[in-house]
Image (cartoon, rainbow, N blue to C red; front, side, top):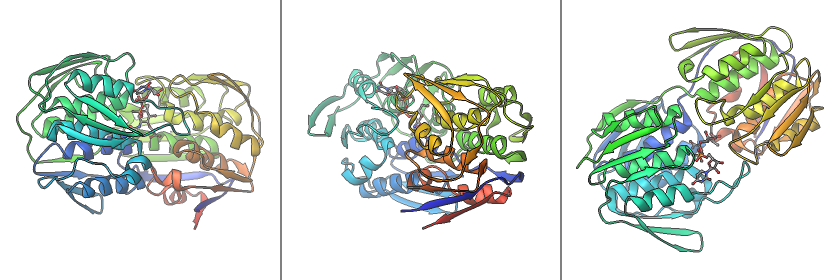
Length: 416
Ligand code: EPZ
């Protein structure tokens, strides 16, 4: 089991480049399956979820080559529509292949992704929307077998702007016959990036970045080379690290245009932020101010940075509160922060955080990807050494959190 050790109380200072976005690249890798040719993605993060998706694509007959941060996927010899159980269950994004395989082959066989530590995470919206496009599902245990023949465009309205369901509908409908109008679509930047990437392959999509998407199916797609944007959640994690440890830093390729709520929130907490093109400079100024934050679908405050905010509010200058509206089970990190001396009371969807606390380094467990990264942030502000166990969760999404924060002056290392 891999562990990260952080010795707290080191100011951060310096400049780093932010890795490519995990949640943008995974659906793009699924999109590569739609095309009987080659897709090249640049700035691909070298993270576990990407390796896992490569394993799935290879098992289906695609060839994948990751050289540095350039990934080449060739899907001309796709021969299997079954997603292997081990990799499929290890990563929720495997469900993206449902839409892509139906679009390409009219058939798919995937495992139910099931619940996870941040909530139950059902896929009812995915299945009902793909059903409207003509897919028929049968289930055996936790295996879903989908058949569609040729998909047909449809009018779909999502009851909630689900990121994954929007991406699955996009992947299926670009190859469908006729036009799909999708209302209530998720507006997350990763959905917009997927639209742009699909358009670079020849797809006909209008409305990217809005809640209404109009997708006209095309007969075939073509080769593309596409640049994965910087990971806004990694940027937000490292901004939180500067706020927690103190100091100042510049983040290059940080996707600041997609971090408006986060920048505003950090400024309300006392940070000074300067944006220049894709670069962002953040300076911390003393204890974060106590505020109330509510997560929500984009352009709201991202749920993926909620755990980091629990840390900052603990260090805050008074009582703060946090309302989680996206995933019901996302307060698991509070339990670990208690071990470090935080006082957080959870009442349903709300966390009340007594600020003014000094954190103390101790042994804690990463319970999920973002919660694990939040414990690293907490370790930077804690007295003594924090040992974060079960860090495999963190490496699913952060390419080199120890190297990045080490570059900024943190005393942090990985122990295998
Ligand atoms: C994506 O998950 C991201 N994952 C998540 O990031 C992110 O937290 C989330 O969007 C919200 O921004 C990837 O992109 C790979 P949703 P997704 O469908 O698509 C409910 C990370 O740490 N829902 O928008 O699964 C669901 O239970 C990860 O990088 C249904 O009820 O999120 C949740 O409450 C974690 N039925 C809400 O909608 C459905 O069919 C939002 O989920 C689908 C979703």
